[in-house]
Image 1 (cartoon, rainbow, N blue to C red):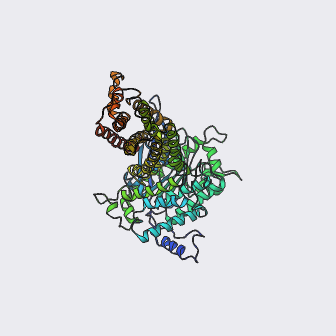
Image 2 (cartoon, helix red, strand yellow):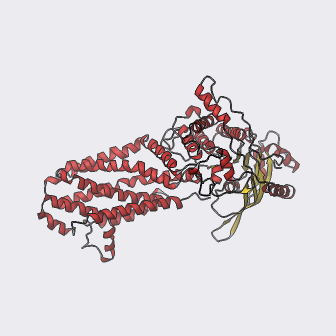
Image 3 (cartoon, rainbow, N blue to C red):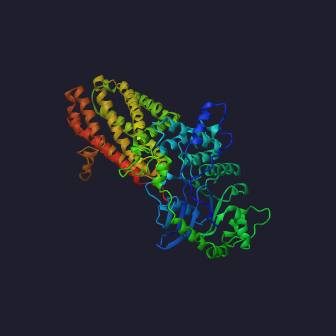
Length: 637
């Protein structure tokens, strides 16, 4: 039933879809010439043997989700994996795509070689069910992003960049996205392209880097019948043009969509077992030979699903499993064994063949094998910074939060404490400093939900080895920190202008205020990296806020603090910063204010200690943030 007569070669058809370029346009002609002359991705054949997955239940018992399954798929095929709920179709796809995080048994080979855990994501792409992308990103930028981070020849190579541009344009043509190329992807709060177009963008991104294998988890779910057909037809076009093996987990396609697939893998549930593995076009004859002909006028795939759904009126699951196990499975197992012994290009050889052997030192490891990332760290960082700058300054809310709100809060607080510097040093002066520090410390708190949303996007992209987590964190820091510091500086400066303090105190008050802002910003970003939701992040951050805001020398002093909590003061950035500012103001305004300082148990001359505490907090928390981004909240399958 498998396409065993096909050969796993690097050949491919070069036919391009109609309407790709205009002969009168020299630029488009050159771009298409680059595309036609570009070398297609090396062919990849996929073989799996005895893939099995058992889930551990709450009572520690084992439940078989997917029974032992074997098969072989040739390059250039468009494969539909179908089955009712609980049949293990998503499990099978995730195991083949190397996305299954839970333990499973069996063997998966690419061109007769075991999958390389370091390089597999360089030759394969996975498109999940969720279209996670920045809302203020254009369609063209989304595709260019993947091309840039997956094709090492783009950097510093004029022909490579031109070929990449042609690749992007061709994908937009094939997926019907050219007319919305410069429209925002959009989201729940941002007007942009339609849901069907967004799904096509995700699929095109998976193919942007010329992957040899594409895995797509329910790419047509939630789409209209027309959008679903457009998606699958575009995938078929690329599969045949570029000889790409594509496996799609799909649910009840209509007749026209089903006819686009070359191969059908049909499963039945409880546990998941294969009942058919072969050409889609031959499926009606097979089921007829089993005694279940497709009724006239019926949608064949709907009928197949009715047959393999336990408890349905047409339930024939057990009979079909028995027939497959006795008449087809042994031959499929022999085919898998035979193809496993036929060695083609390894993952490293496929990558070198794709780049013409010129992957460059920056893309090679010490053993001269390609690295898991296609481009070096500096290019990852540059690309991420470019994206972050664009989507930040295109977002009116980000501009409002960064400029309008701080300025407004600065005016309000400035009016509340207007002229306080002209009234002499006293308790109100200390309270002013305390309130200013509190307001600036909390400025980054509302940003935690957006940080978690960005992390979800990052996890999907890093799972595809587009870039390292540390590159994303550094890019965010490089873009966000100057904006945040500017916001804090704007607010602090406005407040200071209202107070009437002498200009000589400006750098003392504002400088220390900015320093404590960086410390609390590090706390909030670290908690956002650890937490799985915005509510959880707030819960994690609350103890730090309570301790540092209470143990500051004003609300609770060293004298009044319980002995068992006195350890908070040495690590409280609020305490050290408040002490540094207040003692300098008192010194500036006269020594007669020393008795007020003594009442708060503040001491002058500890600026270095205060600076050290803030610097250490920033370094430690940023490192913990990187570790949390890398090891926590990973995609679980």
